[in-house]
Image (tube, rainbow, N blue to C red):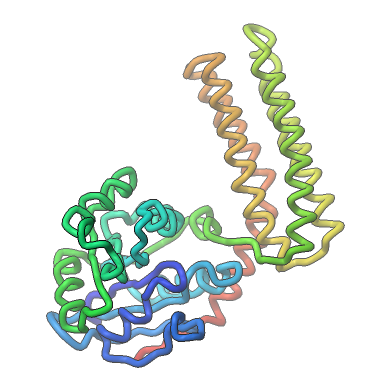
Length: 327
């Protein structure tokens, strides 16, 4: 097989249009009235030096379980040379950036393989065109992403292949192996209004408790702080997971349960980091403090492991049902 290039990104960004032009195919596009890629398609480019292009399900469709499973199926079978994350042009550059950050974080360990592909650049105001590439690159500096391709609707398969060839040239093929945290990082909640309303009430209850705990910690100093901060944070974790379990037992929906967990996990992880910042402010970054932080993070991971294992089991089962179409 030639060097393999993965096309990935949110739905509606123009991935399938790129695939069609580069491989001389005619798959329906999302903007054409239906969600284009429901399976994974693999086909060689028809122009230029030659590479193999992989079109995947887009992120943002339902809860992303099928999308993530499709990616894992690819990684089981194909070594990847380049990861092309596709984003549609927007005059608000932050929107371009924000629609890619979750995917970049999932592949952060493979950042040297990442290229950001901007589509629909013909919608850019002419006065901004000369500086766009430098301006948009600044948003991605923290991820150390330096590879960009800018495309327009007028681009042909030949011009696109030339652009892709230039970025692929020095890329080496390798297996992509995602960690458990990376795998579940992009799961989303479904838009079930009644379920979401109940969940937001659950989250609000936990938020109030956490806010009170933060204030109590901030008012402690010296010996009182050292003797109580671990107990206080542990209490927050236990209370939070008790509320979550009560909510899930009351709203028995296994499919939604797994996704709600992910949202709760992200929320609580952020809160834990805030608590650890308070600890650093009060105690400084001593070796003892760092050891306590590790213990607290391990406690957190122990609490969430039953949920994450269930989700990963579902995803791994789903991987078996995914199909790769070699064209």
